[in-house]
Length: 242
Image (tube, rainbow, N blue to C red; front, side, top):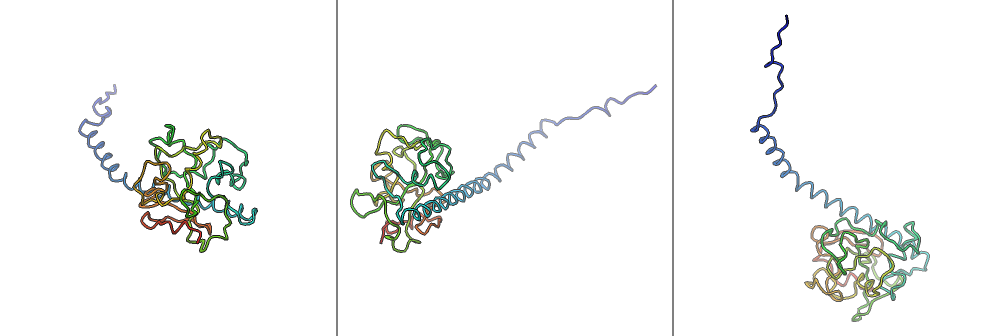
């Protein structure tokens, strides 16, 4: 007759102390890895944002080629604003109304928490960039302009990361009930720079993000290259035509 040794065949589980040690080790590893993972995530957002701006630059260059060097800038009474003008050059219908499927105008680092104007969540934002509409005249925005008017285009900004805020319109569609909404997507005043401390005004408050990517933001220049620029280095000189 065969006798089985029950103790020998009994499976042994973790003791409470062993389980607590394992949990503590995992928690320690996560605490060590999280900063590195967050840094990688932020870097990925910055790289994708730069890629988006470069693609917008390609679209803008093609648009300029088709329209004798003219490019859209500030709002023109709500008609044919820049992100609508470039739709055919990114493979979309110029008359499309719902923009929620677009990714090229999004920045992954744009805040997901909080709300823009009319309490619309920032997480629904489609257009995360602001256009250069500087004229040098008080409260006067540039509309369509020839690229040839810009001296040293490699140092002149066309597009930049936009600041988020309760005044900022969350754009999901080309149909807007308030025509002033599109006028909040351009830079034409010194108070719109990252150095501005005004974070609440929709007219003369900060519109260019001061710390979207590290200590600055990504910018598309008029020779259609994109790069990250520190907030302290961004001046209105970069937006002037001459």
